[in-house]
Image (cartoon, rainbow, N blue to C red; front, side):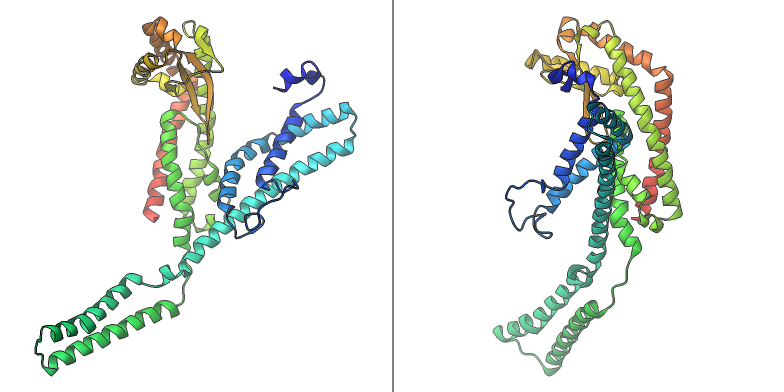
Length: 402
């Protein structure tokens, strides 16, 4: 976009660093909820009020931004150098370049600090649950005791009076003793719940704070593996570098390290395979005339890994046939499932399918057949199977502890 707007001028000066700093500036606006501007902001709402509404919404935006910031952090050295070249060539002075470089370092340190504070908030919220009224007081047993007191102390005697049932002193004494015992038991139960010291439960904490979220992430990862998508490892990295790691068992800790290491390698192989398949689609003689980077109408989606499965190709071709009857200008959308978003690198026009459905589908099958025997595909399948086994082991350990 910058090249189109600036033309040849943009080529004369380094521009990537400037775009990088602009993105970081927008990130600051999101994180600080636009606090640098002078517009009037509502009172009693986060961040004007620490306990006001809006914190959950801000945290949701921060967590979504955090993944992008991790990616940006990997490029900070390259982008700062690019910006320094721009400063030198535009004669703004080296001081300005050094100042911006320091600002980038401080920004990412501040982001890490905010993430650490949010983690501390989560930890405190989980720990304080043990001290809440609902967790300390056995409400169910107290309700049962009070219901029995109400039944035997009020309903039964009133029923005897209404129906003129004669009772002897033994029966009356028995009811009175039972009611008094139930009342006393209720007070003892409630008093013990309130007075009994609440002991910290590290295991309960780690199950709530880490085990359950990790199991949810593993379920998401299993679906991503079916699509050949990239895995979001933020949660797994967080627990691996958290002080809470000491609360994990030795087996859980070792399984977590193994999963992180293999998942990192899997992401590299998955991205490499996806790119290889996309390049094959672009180079295919039957499909190339209908391939574009930008699409119009959507249609059936194709995850690149599905091209190696004939059953998936049959499903996609059937979907194209149905979609084109409704929307003649629909496209086959090639979709890569990234860590937290979907990347649509290619659109294959449905006109190619309409021109010759058999040729279109056979071209996809041919690409799959040629790809599956390549070293890239074999390495991907090997690391995927290895990751599946490690994930199964980690899931079993977490479920056993939960």
